[in-house]
Length: 172
Length: 465
Image 1: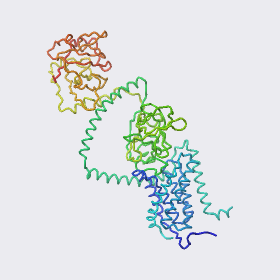
Image 2: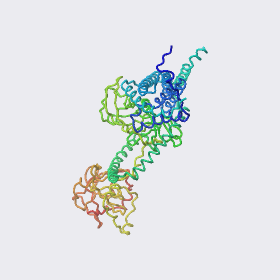
Image 3: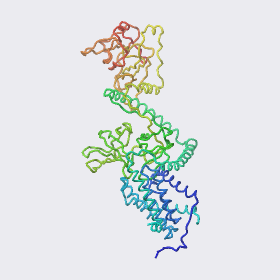
């Protein structure tokens, strides 16, 4: 028996028109690359990840979620000097997981969004660390304190960002 | 099997997508040793994102320029005044340093030492970053169209920033020195220890490969060694901020970068580096102490009026080499071999000692260089006006010699009362009070057969007396 934490009637599926689906990830990538030039601390945020989580949860389609995650992750990889695919793999998994979670629970309220983002941020970082360290042999270091602070900070930004992006989604 | 895939369609797609990416990663890792190519997806991503960044930077600069250049001008006068003073100070400092550089060039020439000079740079605007804490790199608004190539050094006025990693049409990716994958050959300036500068995971910079038993003090400057064939030797990296014993019997030397790597706006890309033997005297004539100082004078004495008849009778001077008298008078037109000869081109300039200026040695002449004059205040008072040159011979005994016969490279001593001879002419002879070394290489050839042409010491009238 499948356990659902919310009824199917409560779960609404949204879609986005093409300009939004293309421009929002691009703007997120642009801001992610531009703002740290003026505010270096902003590098701890991961706007493309937040966009992946938002689209995946709103669409509630696992395939759409993982493809969105893969595309945004690969684009993010392309802007770095590292091998292409590290962010891609991490965001593919997050996209799949977020859309799977979106099917099962109501993620429209602020608390669920906050906790969900904290969880998926940590998942993303763990996958990134494993791939970067295990496959590519990058000398990345894991710092629990930094990761938790970053997860909470990203979740705080996600609450605001998701509220803004809610205006762009259309009921399917 | 097909049924299984159909039943778990979503998971199957996930596995397929992940597998494809892992495969792609594996290929890249395998080819990374010699992979210089730029992947198409990188070009697409950069082409999609950097136009936004360029547009924002352009608007930002336009707005900021309008505000700062036309509206907000508070304190500009004071700043301008301070900058002028700074320029004055730096020009004098430059004169002093050029002396040292010239000496270093001569020594390098003796050693056949080839050095690299930055011959060409290109200013670029930083328009974006990778946006990742794991990839410390920035994008600049110049690319292959502007002549940028991979592995070119990138600097700011403060110090080294990084190197060009990927080049696109109109943008380039610059790998910063605090990235973990970057490596710069460095030297610790005081201890002359060599090491490799690498980025740390937290964005710091550290020097590796320095043995534990070496002594490194915080505050020591770190410069490039030139060994990496990317950064020319001697560029500032930063200063040592901490030293710890590291693993594998190497020190962990933490360096504070001189350039602010977290707030880069404009950078210089070194697009041309020349390798050549140093040429002594090549800087001569560019910056001259007398030029600097003469501009500071309220008035410079006019050129002495020379009677055309006398000038015609005076033998032609083959070359003009500056000569300094210890009182601080610089005769640009005088030649060492004809010290004291009235020369129509001689232009005395008075030395005004400036605070912070390091005077050169007394009466030192450098081949092909104009001299730093000895501040008058540091010298003894003027002896009797009528004095002649006294040349110290090889035995050390003084003998009176006409200046035209003074062998170059000897020491000119002030004349004493016993050795002073009045010049047969009516013109007052030159006053030379402190020893002055006249270089052999720069002196015009005083040929033996020319002795008859200038049998007498030719005096120069010091108008200040």
